[in-house]
Amino acid sequence: MYSYEDGELAVKYARAAVEQAVKGGRMPPFDMPEHFNEMSGAFVTLNTYPEGELRGCIGYPGPYFPLVETIEKAAEGATRDPRFSRLRKRELDTITVEVSLLTPPELIEVEKPMDYPGKIVVGRDGLVVKKGGYQGLLLPQVPVEWKWDVKTFLSQTCMKAGLLPDAWLDQGIEIFKFAGEVFTEKKPGGEIVRKELV
Image (cartoon, rainbow, N blue to C red):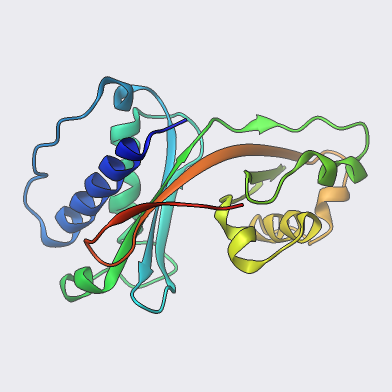
């Protein structure tokens, strides 16, 4: 879906957007390829280094903006994720930046809810759960990092939406899946690698 060069550029751009959001000033110029102007979803995740603990994660699952704009908005949002205090200047050298480049979410169609697990692959798929006014999303790397099976992944996505763990068995629930390619810094501002999820 995306080349290593695309992922490397996305992470460098996200790092610049994070630093601009925290320190102020203008974004440095980047030479963006044409396909970065196509509408696409993306998430930016900030992790503490070397602990690897979540410090912020914001993004847009759907193709609402051109990719370059999605990355910038997500990076800025991750610095003020409401679950955490705002990122401070002194933390910029102690966080790694990770970018997940996403395909548009597709509705998983099943005859009965028990069929959902057979339609989802851990390490390939991210999930979005919707029911009424509730919605939750988990990225493809989350079940891999937590060593979840498919049913646990479904339950955790339901809980992220504010629903009961077994809500994926309810009638009227909608479950979407999407693919993602994940690129991350190995250390703050350092080498960028493609994260292997499977």
